[in-house]
Length: 208
Image 1 (cartoon, one colour):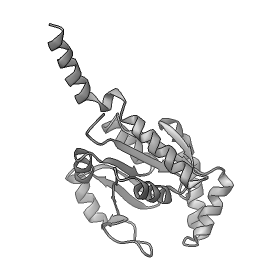
Image 2 (cartoon, helix red, strand yellow; image 1 turned 30 degrees about the vertical axis):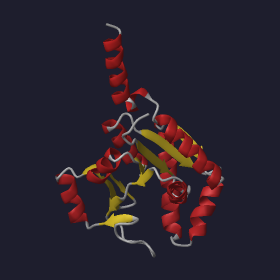
Image 3 (cartoon, helix red, strand yellow; image 1 turned 180 degrees about the vertical axis):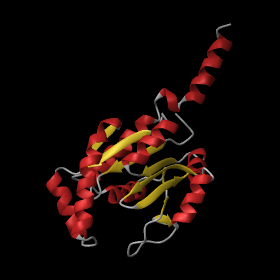
Image 4 (spheres, helix red, strand yellow; image 1 turned 90 degrees about the vertical axis):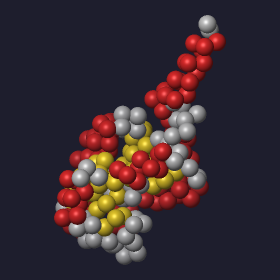
């Protein structure tokens, strides 16, 4: 019903499987665009600038803030992350549903600017499973894992601010549920303003 794309904000605890979920969503459906965040953290093995993230220095990030080139930005484990405004707007104007995979701080800031945005929080089936996934990565120290779990405790306090919660215990099922949630969002009045205005005008014309 709506030609313009909608904004979807996806958050979740580190280790909940957000990245895997987003990759599967984009592989199965062609109407999505995954927003690429700018970050000051160092690339992990296999990550490429402009693909997983735009890797920038802290000075470059501060310049982007000053020029209002970011929809939102937040600090997480001593690094900064932000969403480039220009990319998001262009994709939505082209009819793509833009998915932002960001932390809870940034998600709530996006909701302030885009009240019609859909906020989805991804959770594992249990806290023990979350820890198992973090350890299973084999890429982080015990201290980093502990920091991520402590962060998850704080993040759990803000889940009620989201529109939906999805349990990621089966990727296929979770992807299907997320796709359905997003498509239904197109039918909300806030995302159908052009259609509503057109029909309203036609009704006034034929009712004369």
